[in-house]
Each structure stands twice: as structure tokens, then as C-alpha cells.
Amino acid sequence: MDVSVIVPTFNRAARLAALLEDLCAQQVGDLEYEILIVDNGSTDATAVTVREQAARDPRVRYLLERRPGASCARNAGIAAATAPILAFIDDDVRPRADWVASVHRAFADPDVDCLGGRIEPRWPAQPPPWLTNEHWGPLALQMGRGSSSRIDRDHAAACLVAANFACRASVFRELGGFSPDFRRDEDREFNLRLWRAGKRGKYVDSVVTYTEVQPERLEKTYHRAWHHVTGRSHARMGYRDSITPDGVLDDSMAFRGRQVWGVPGFLYREALVHLAGYVRKLCSGQFEQAFFEECRLRYLSSYIAERWRHRQAPPRPVQV
Image 1 (cartoon, helix red, strand yellow):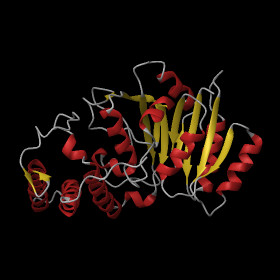
Image 2: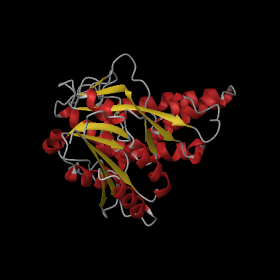
Image 3: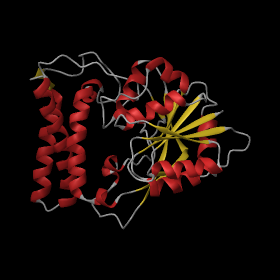
């Protein structure tokens, strides 16, 4: 095998059938690839859907992982995979016809340990005016990475999201898999472990997928909840404590400044800036812009509150 495709799934049999068709119809030339569907304890027709496709295409394999969480499902796929390159795609994402070939081609560069690809939206309806690219995080969209495609210790602010991600199997053997301790942001936590180990990632715009944006993700309620949960998750992994304003991963105390109740002082200052911006934009009638400030406030307040709750507790080791 040249590439192992790993798909964690839970109760999305209807969407999974279309994804399987796309994966089985990939334009790969002479490449050999397998498709591992990891059922994370679904109660719908997932098992039947996968086994029917496997009967038609022997490259498809069905795996059952009952421990809940996408990390556990992906780790089961990693353990069963046979190829040197492992490509991950989520069950609500569709690949372009050359996705597998594009993944394999990118790893011709020996300096690439892992990569993230393009994730474009397919909208269920016209998105609201406030939903600009500043709000793409909750939608798991990934398009463009500025002037540099490198993601590593010196360019660590961006996250290569697991919805369209690939990594050398040797890296998982060295560092372990995705952490079950994180039911959200397990890809961010794995990214940080990669960069701390000196691994090098790359954003590859030609590795293209499309996500069917769920209607509820066009609502402000969803975005508010996402920022609250993500703030807590980032606090647990110390993300903002470790990334400098220039995007460098730095585990020293040099850039953090004075800590107050276990929280770096710059995070309080940042929260005050967003609070002032929120009030100013509300008063001037810039309600769409004010929502961005509100989301940042929700993220930071959640991050800070999580640190207050656990400032006396020793750091928990990551379980993989």
C-alpha cells in the first residue's frame, strides 16, 4: 500500500455512502491505497453501508472502535493501517477526485512529516453577512495560510486540522496517536506535540476537500458555544501560554510576562482590548463587527476561567 485513508465516523450512514463512492473512485494511476472506515459505535446503518461497499471494493475495510471520541477512532485506524502515509478525512467531508494522489505527491518532499489540505465550504444556504473568514474556525474551513505554507515550531499558530490531514506512519510510531483526553481540538494538541518534537508540517493548497456546512453552524448560538468550549480546551493544553505573538512555539517563560492566578498577564490585556472593541462597535451600530469581538471575549474568558479552576493542580500528562 502507498496510502491508507482513515475515516472516523459516528451515525452518518447517509453521508458516508457518498464519501465512500468518492474515495473508491479516486484517480490514482498506479498508486495502491486502502480505505479504513472506523465506526465509533454508531447505532444507524453505518456498518451495513460500509460492508456493502466493501463487498464491491476490497480496498474498503470496516473497523469498530467502541471507545467514544474521534481520537480513539483515528487511533484504531492508525493501528490497522498498512501504508507509510496515513491520510485522514472526516465523514462530513468530500475529497476531490485527485485527493489521494495529491497527498502522496506532497510527501515526495522528504522534509514534510505531515500536511494539511484545503477545506472549502458547500453552503446549505446563503451565509449571513457576519460570517466572514474571521469566523471560519468553527466551520473547520482551511483555505490559504498567508505567505508561508510551513507549519512547525517557528510557525506554530495555525492548526493543520484533522478533517483533511496526512502524516507519515513513522511519526505516529514515534510520538503516539491522537490524545483521547481531548474530545475537541485533538488535532491542535497533536500539532503541538509534532512541533515540540522538531517535526515539520506543510499546508498544501492542492490537497482539496469540501465540507457540507451544517445549517446550525450558520447560527451565532453555535459560534458562541464553540468559542467557549475551545477556550477551555486550549487552556488545558496551554496553547496561548506557549505561542508567542509572532507565532513561535516557546515553552520558556520569557514572553508571558507576569502571571496572575496562573494566567499570563497579556491574556488579561487582550481580553480588555476586545471588551473595549465590543462596546465601541455596539455603540456605533457595527453589530456584525461587534460579534467578532464577542467571540474573542468568550474564548478568552473561558480560557482564563479554566486556568483559574486548575491553577493549583499539576499538569495532566497527555494520554495516547
